Length: 198
Picture 1 (cartoon, one colour):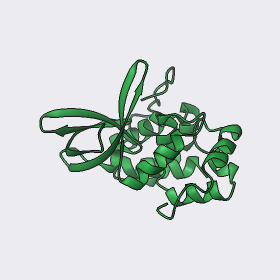
Picture 2 (tube, rainbow, N blue to C red):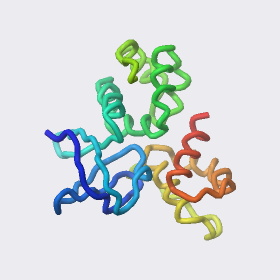
Picture 3 (tube, rainbow, N blue to C red):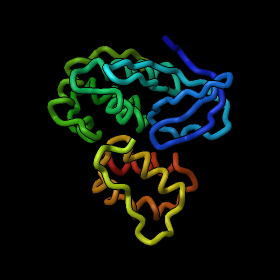
Picture 4 (cartoon, rainbow, N blue to C red):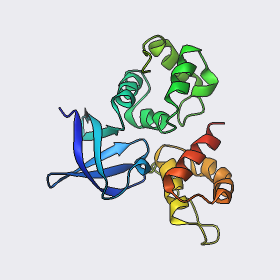
């Protein structure tokens, strides 16, 4: 139904962005909301997913990212949120290389991707790529250890949680992230993804 939305980012949540297009606000789930800034003009490629009790828009930085997403959700066991979690690392060439090289270990580093699902991804998608190549239910929020965490760090941790990483997994890397003293949620999200997928 929609190919892309061209408007102004009005709100950023750890799991989605709101984009105003001619006075209408669209809630768009994206892999990394912190690639965007509030009041930024943006063009977001989108895919509408309709299910029994839900209609959602999933957004992408470019057509290549959308292409990978559509391939991922065609795999049995991969839903839209799992596909976004895989895309969040933005190492798309590494992802494609892992699929082509039957690298199950690389794929199982993503949240909720077990060995069986990783093998299914490889089986279904190997050879298909060309050269272009909300918080989990019941999940406790990341606790503040001493009240000195920056808003950027906490936003980055919340974004990791929205991608499906557990509180326990995030708690293990929290001190390492804090020590990096980064200046943006996007930076903390990227650094966290690197640590979690080592």
